[in-house]
Image 1 (tube, helix red, strand yellow):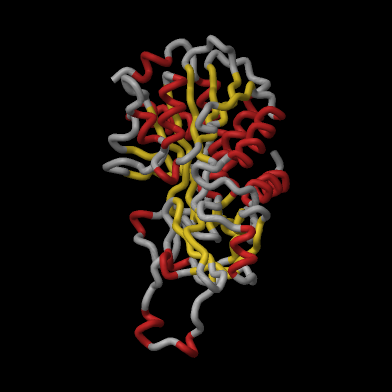
Image 2: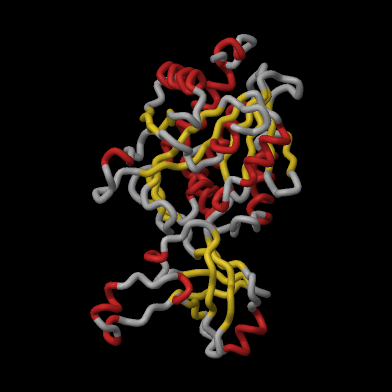
Length: 350
């Protein structure tokens, strides 16, 4: 996929609602994209999307997982002046909310803004305070009767923020975590459709990762893969971040730690060097907080690894990454798939 097409696809996906538990509209677009890429596509009861390439009885069966859901909000109540109060879905930092543009998905989409009392009428102490979410409200410009005719408690609210192109290969948007990972899987699927694989690759676009990696749990239990690979984001370098927790945007990141099968990630490093794919190593001594966590411990256990895309400003409306890492992740997935032969079990044996 050319860079322009990658940006076009991401822009479309970023403007498609897909809050955790409400991924249906996004799932339809993902199914169409993987079907057009030549994959066998299906969906489960939780709304995970599966896209398979390679022989149906191929071994090993490799599950690759990236999540399509996004953080957002839900309507709690409407006050007597028509202001909409809300709760969060997933990990939202309340510091980013004032002055955000949102779309309230009622009987029809309503554009709204999250307002904040101006500094002219606040005290010094008020200006130092980060308002909790339950003290913020959305203004859609209508009175209470008009709002209540269109909006009900439980309606979804998502950020209204398109993809922005920065210089070179860098883009910014509000749900690159983890729709950039889904794009990497699509890119790998496109590259693999002409290959004569001995393995079976199943790309899973998972749901509800932001509220507990639920989709990946269901998918892994049902598929019973021999190998699992999660794709998600990690923290990119910014001037104010601890140097040992962040990575340059231009290189993919391979994680090591107890959540990761040591021989699998070593084999991935070998393949990356062979393919001249630049990568960094992230040491994660506990859980990774990604789909890799439930994949590893599904049923009797699955050899699991994690590929990460460095992303600046995670869980904001201006998440920023380098499209090179999407390409490199896809290239690594392609190389791993074509390298898996009859000796795969021996290579991964502890």
